[in-house]
Amino acid sequence: MSKDTQLVILSGASSGIGLAMARRLLEEGYQVIGISKDANEKSLNHESFMPRQIDLSDIDSLPKAMDDLVKEVDQLGLPVKALINNAGLGKMAFLEQLSVADLRLVMDVNFMSHAIITKSFLPLLKKQGSGDIVFTGSEAALKGSRQGSIYCASKFAIRGFAQALRDECGKSGVRVSILNPGAVRTPFFDELNFEPGADPENAVEADDVAAALMTVIEARPGTVLEEISISPQSHVWQRKK
Image: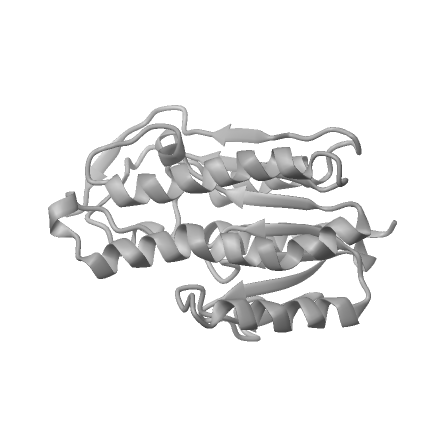
């Protein structure tokens, strides 16, 4: 089946890892629906890119938004190659410095939104008997770290969710995978007081994660790359001046 007749749904498509994924998918020839809070036609100018503005932090409205999107996808009549749950944010501080609103925001965007999106699209994927569900996790899903309590919790949650879903979908033809990148040079760090070290070996590039995504979704039918970690050669952090 030609790639230009296959559809990929991608959240967090307007910047960082998601933007790199969108560009790579489009280069490979896929049709892409890009979900983001600030989506617009200028975020990625490509004839095969369809931006959809949806606020994933608005959990109460998200089920209806997803129902509408599923109907739109069904009407397009294109098989869904992959659903990529990539959107995320970070609130890094000691726990007592975070508000209850901070806790809820991180869990809603990093976990609950992806659970809702996946729940919405899963019947469609199972009906077609194929497709990949890919989550962008994190090295923070593998080990907790200071000032990362709620962020790590959200990523541990998404990893457990992916593992359980993998078991649930095993006989359906739907594959489930998770990518766990380490520090990636993206706007993720814009509002934080630290960042990866200056050396190229201190961070992963967004394109590296996009390359891992392609390996996952283009794996031979009948095989599943359940989990991939993408780490910098040397873990170095520095405080911003």
